[in-house]
Length: 193
Image (cartoon, rainbow, N blue to C red; front, side, top):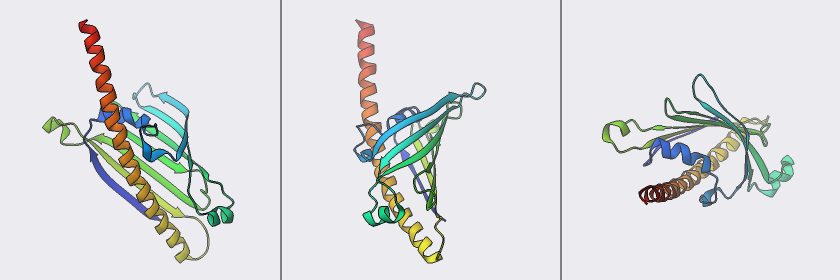
């Protein structure tokens, strides 16, 4: 098993990040063109905690080499199952995802947490922390060296995709702030008229 871990801070409030999270795979995000569909399977609010629990199926196209597709009998379409928890009380968004495609060969389990940066309350400048963690395990039997190489290559690719994903999400955050700001301004003007 290999582990990927990354932490960063967005210069946006938790409210902005948690709202924009649902638009992560929209046309504003040029880095997510590989995502062809996001289907919400269920969405429920726990009445005792107020936590919103959402299950989604994310369908992507992948660029696996043709020989890998031929060897494993796969296609260029892959699926990821995601469960997310949004807690307005603790101001946290936790997303847990796992690959459904080729999960008998490679297991990828990712957890992403967004929460207010600890200095936000003391400085007045609201920021949001991202904590990203993934466990990548090659499940194919055989030589340990081969499994290790598969995991190593998978972690490298995961890291590249995660970087593109963060850059794309930053674009979504920028657009969301601008669009919602324009909408608030229009509402303000309408109230004054």
